[in-house]
Image (tube, rainbow, N blue to C red; front, side, top):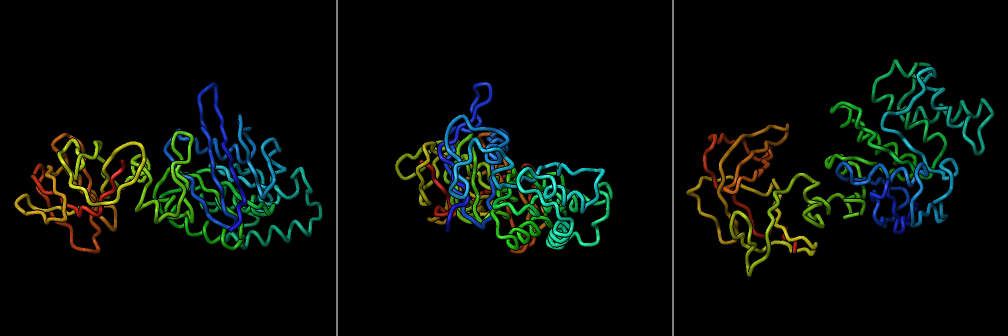
Length: 357
């Protein structure tokens, strides 16, 4: 699959503080790409550098094979959807969408019939038919999101950048808009680069997920691989679904603050030793239950449980004071009741652990 965007050793600093510290990435044409990272990792800076709102200090940005660092934003053929939508309150839905066509610096569309036809088509594509004459102050958050997207798509960009596009929406609307954004992208056949700080959103949306850490791409892969094989303990931590222990491999075990954890899982070279076990790979058993030869067992005290719809997350404190989390899907069995401050065995298969060396 051909690349629509290539980033080569891109650097950007503000007042001497690096925001992007050597970004290398290649984005395929006609795909949905999620850009995930914690606050301060450089996500929005990277988006703004790609769009042309900020210039990189060094490195190259190639768009459709053409170098665009130094090229003004309006000449790049890249659309940008702002987090706060940036709609014009004095214009109707249709007028907001038409604005990008009639006022762009390069090849503005002046034929009113052509503008009306293209606006009508894009309104149908994003599901806003019947709202053309509404003021943007009279529509919902999800409809405003679609107006902002339509205003970008009507100019027929080859790529669309979305800066936390679902952040201003309530939880139910965010879930629905995930599906709608993917459907709209597939219909348009352009690449979407979607910035988010939500690991669940990134995994649900992206054909490819880029994980940004301290101004560098820590991992670039498909959502399934990222979830099951994070490249480092830091990446696993961003996913918020792994219990992670510091320590080091010692013989046939991993020496951790809670004791020796028998090895048997996947080992990955990451430069920073750690042992990780996913929340949903752990079983909770009575302390008198023995572990099998292929299992790892530690003890902990129960603190509380939290329902999250299809699953229940139980929290324990280990003997070193660290919190350990277990996720149980309710489709498997009815939730058990645990005694507050009661001692329990936490058990998992050796092969389910990830060991970073």
